[in-house]
Image (cartoon, rainbow, N blue to C red; front, side, top):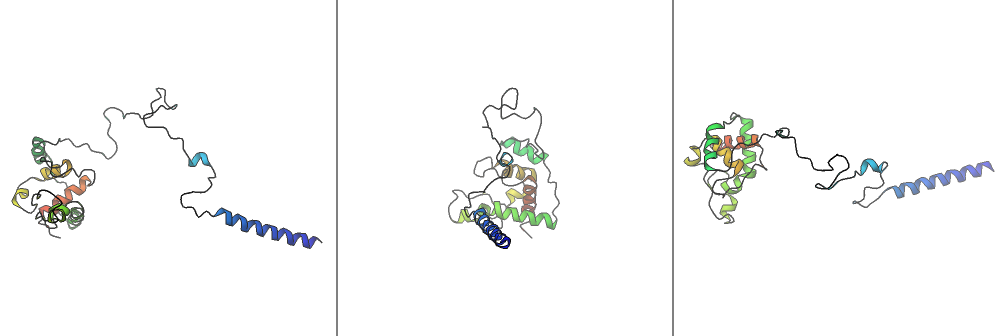
Length: 192
C-alpha cells in the first residue's frame, strides 16, 4: 500500500514539474515575465521638470555646478562666424600624424560622412550631387581652395558647419579625433 502512494506522489510531482515548466515559458516578446524583486526592476521615475521629495528645494532636474564641465567634454571655444573660423585656423593644430592607422580611420569616417556630398575622391561628385538631391555643388576637397586652408579652419567647418550654411555641423556625428583624421585623409590626396 505504501508503494502505491509513493508512485502516485512521484507522478504528481512529475506532472507538477511539467505544468511549472509549461507555464514558466512565455512566448510573448513584449513581456519580461515575473520579477523576483520588483522594487529593483522598476524604479520610481520623476518627471524632468516636476517636483521631487529627494531634495530640499523639490527640484528634480538640477543644473550642474557653475564652472564645471562634464567628463571628456571639451567645450569648443569658437562661434560660427568667419572671424572665428579664421582664428580657429590660426590656433588649432592637428594633433595626429598621418600614420597608416590614422589615414585608414580618416578614410572610413570620410566615406561615411563626407563622400555622400564631396565624392569618394573629393571632387564634388558625391551621390547627392549626381542625383541632384543637393541643390548646390559642394567645394571640391581635392582642389587648391581646401589645400590652402589651415587644418584648424577645416576642423572648424566640420564642427560648426560652413559659414554659408550649405554644410551643416557634423559635431554630433563625428568625434573630434575622427574630424582630425578625416582632415589627414583629405590632406594626403585621398590615398590609402
